[in-house]
Amino acid sequence: MKLLMAGLVVVGLAAVGAAQESQAAKTTRQKLKQKISIEFKDLRTADIFKDIENEMDKPAKFKVDTNTGMSLNTKYSYKAKDKAVEQILNELSDKMECGWIVVSNPSNNKVDGWVIIRKNSKGKERGHEAGKEPK
Image 1 (cartoon, rainbow, N blue to C red):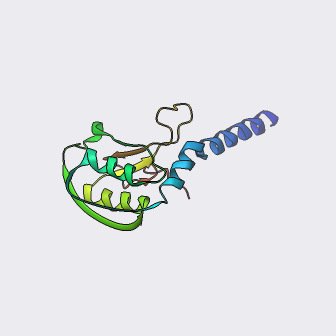
Image 2: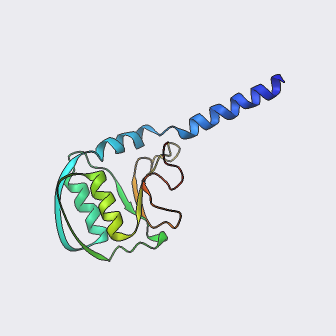
Image 3: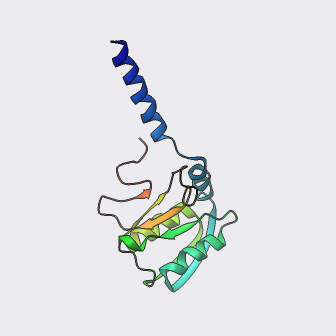
């Protein structure tokens, strides 16, 4: 019985640890609450996210994941005035038929806290991986 209880405690602690976000991911989510104004016409996907990053007072790192079917060369037009970056990402994701996530992986400092733009067949991703949204 004690062994079973110890196993449940370890499993419970592992689940709690897995659900917590890294500090870099939390910082990025705060950065995405910044309000910016942006306007572009027929701009390539690759340049869209560079422009958003440049408009931010406290920039976040963006990466377009071309391995998922995203093209860096597709052109889009968009206009936003005084909107949170998070809201802009949601609207662009609807337009581009893609999603975005904030990476929370403290064991990989290279991408921890980055915003990844990608296509996904599992469902809409708006800041969190599909199926891993906070309850």
